[in-house]
Image (cartoon, rainbow, N blue to C red; front, side):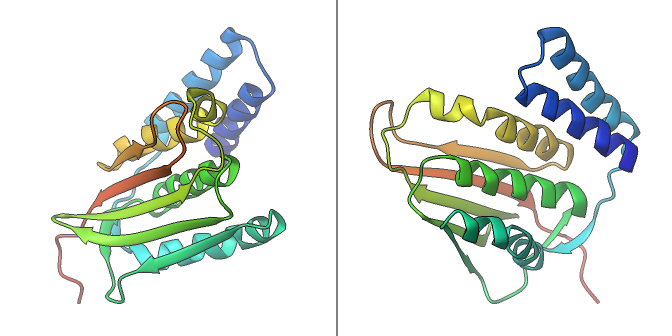
Length: 183
């Protein structure tokens, strides 16, 4: 698993360095190959515990950039059915997207139950008018999160202002609740 993770990471780095289309296609193939050999381990997880762990991991970077990540979650545990590693990586990618966009220094992250799903909503006000270039600059973070969310039966929705307008940038990560009882 470590080897496959390193190969996928190396592919992402090559993309960032402006690799050719052929090498980019090679990294996409590496990610697909990693999926074929990557065992998805669905288990019951506590969502708020995962979010707090990620906040701790990213805390140093967030403080170094003079930003704030405000967590707002329900007091009751939210149990989801997912792969721990994939879920953590998706959430790290989504938070990193906000850290890279030109948003106010105060990003909100809320977790809640909505029907048969748990939702993590990340949002912040933009400091500059929305443009498709903003999304394109960090599209790899979203594309990776979208790819992996599909593998664990989750979804990601993006909401942003109209082109050229200021407003709220929002990502919603929905993931199925655990149906089995916790004993």
